[in-house]
Image (cartoon, rainbow, N blue to C red; front, side, top):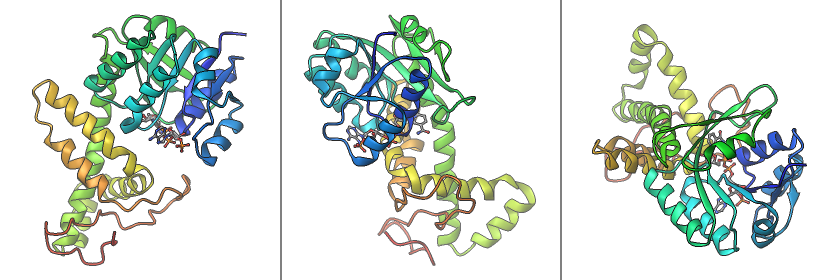
Amino acid sequence: MALAVGVVHPGAMGAAVGAALRAVGTEVCWASEGRSPATVDRAAAAGLTDVRTLSALARRCPLVLSICPPHAALAVAGQVAGAGFAGCFVDANAVSPATARSVAAAVEAAGARYVDGSLIGPPPAPGRPVHLWLSGRGADEVAARFARTDVRARVVQAGDTAASSLKAAFAAWTKGSAALLLAVRALARASGVEQELLLEWADLSPALTGDSDRAALQAARKGWRWVGEMHEIAATFAAVGIPPGFHEAAAEVYGAVAPEPHVPPEHPVPPVPPVPPVPPGRAAPATGARAG
Ligand SMILES: NC(=O)c1ccc[n+]([C@@H]2O[C@H](COP(=O)([O-])OP(=O)(O)OC[C@H]3O[C@@H](n4cnc5c(N)ncnc54)[C@H](OP(=O)(O)O)[C@@H]3O)[C@@H](O)[C@H]2O)c1
């Protein structure tokens, strides 16, 4: 059996990546200390080995994958480093290159090696692979661990944090344009012209009504997590001298959406009005907009 891989922590993506490694016989460990019942259930369903603590994980796994909300990435790296991890640490989260460098510094100070990573696409399932991009020294070695799995690991040769840059560029469009659609419908609703906007879209841009409905559904499920990701994207733009304001505004839009995390993925119709509430003091209250 190949050497064990640790996952911190088995969320929707981490558990699915773990299951993909399990399917080719790799032992995948996680640490339940401090985690929620939902994470316990996901890890069990994916066949992951619970070693209880991060210290045990650090001893048992020469490779650890960090797959957690972007706003927690640096803290999680610090906890793994603090547990004495001295193997190869891959941060696969949607963070800026600057945050990736801070993560690298935290784990390298504890004696570990850092490989930058990012995940593009929904959690993998049999026959539906996710893309794992890797960059920096040791990226090829990590990629080899995913051979024959539903994780398509690819190395990007454009600097040590290129995987993070690529994810920022990809999500800048997918989640940034979705936030813009939410803001546009909020504007139309606040101005009393939403139905007329939908008529114009039906005539001239027929995809946009459905796109904005889907954006509302996704924002209700995951918008709370995308706030941090939008700030990371904004920082990525700023670092190369491109205005970061689009994604700072997107963070504000997602932060205004009332969370509905338990909407089932197969739900066909958006259960929430497709607008975030207008922040107090910014504009006239939106007629019929969801409170909160
Ligand atoms: N899901 C996707 O479709 C998708 C697609 C591409 C990339 N990704 C990337 O994958 C990463 C994880 O996404 P996900 O969908 O798996 O998220 P998720 O389902 O929300 O899971 C996050 C995991 O991290 C743990 N966690 C939450 N807050 C934490 C904190 N403050 N400190 C430490 N651990 C914390 C959770 O454990 P507890 O609940 O037990 O705290 C949970 O097990 C993100 O960086 C995201 O950008 C996800």
